[in-house]
Length: 245
Image (cartoon, rainbow, N blue to C red):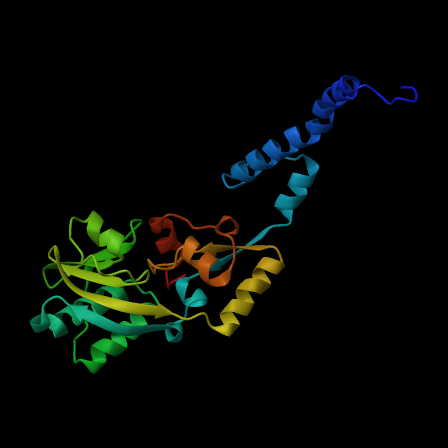
């Protein structure tokens, strides 16, 4: 270049010539990483021998909602009746459906039913939906218990002022009767157990019958990425969490 230094356009042309070559590593690695992560969720691993080793090193553990949020971790902070004359009936219907579903969410509702002398009735045609709710027939009434979105999908309007994320709604014969404010508390032992599983390479399979305990809810409360959890469809979660197993 001589004592005056290299011409600007000469430096620019050399830089432009080598930049694509240097960027090749990023241009290939970043898309491959994104595709690999997406396909891994569907059971496909990209990466050769290292990927096979990763697959062989992963273990799975089955967790029900009682393992994540036991009964003492769930409490009812209050409820709102749409018809004050139906208090005992509304509480009885809610507790009966949740008890028949064999979920830990039923424990505070059974306690509330006992305090209000509301009987637990037999339930038939029980169905746990992927939409976030549980339905069944109780004494000839069609009872639906679930999240606000589930109730709305069933064609039932809910009050616009209800903003609770874990609220439980109960509708009987397509009429909303009662709304509960439910609180989930992370117990220290459960938090430690979930952290221990993640640190040791275990992928939890969430076989929850509680419509509030979803992959995103667990991520929010325990800090475990939802991509590290296995959250099967409702029918599979129901069969895997069968109390008789």
